[in-house]
Image 1 (tube, rainbow, N blue to C red):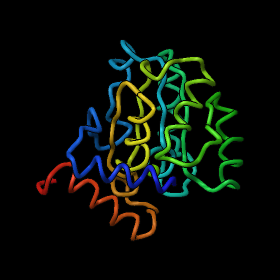
Image 2 (image 1 turned 120 degrees about the vertical axis):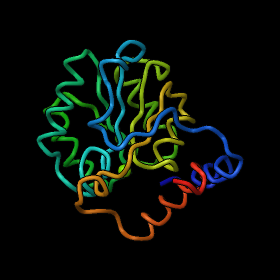
Image 3 (image 1 turned 180 degrees about the vertical axis):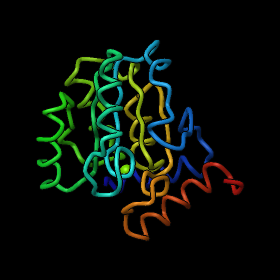
Image 4 (image 1 turned 135 degrees about the horizontal axis):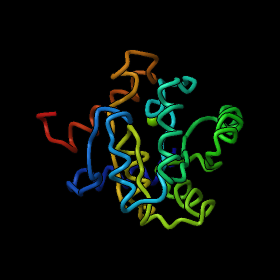
Length: 183
Ligand SMILES: [Mg+2]
């Protein structure tokens, strides 16, 4: 995580700046067919977005990724995972014809720019989907991604391995401030 950018995120959060276009329960609820009208690229976060924290890709997600590609989208992944895990994920994703950015310092915009350059698709044709306001949503907005979706944590939705408690607490705090106390 890039701390300087993350502190900038808090500044924008406290100023009530708009960050996301839509909030969904999970990646499975999104209408990708409809998104296809104005987008050519889908960029996902990995942990707690496509699967549980530190999980492998479940069959439902593999099916979904293939469906998204069949609609004509290119798919990219930007994750703050450790380097050893990045190498593992790179192997998995290369078989699926999905590019995972080697840049792992969200909320820096670099990973999103990297995916855009890899596919030669501008970010004003991209949608970004992730479970953290302060990392992928803010990083996407800095990068100029057209559409930004926040989803609930995969681990909360599907009752599986989650991130360590201080990070979950921080995530809840970010959401509480962003959405107001009613959410
Ligand atoms: Mg995540």
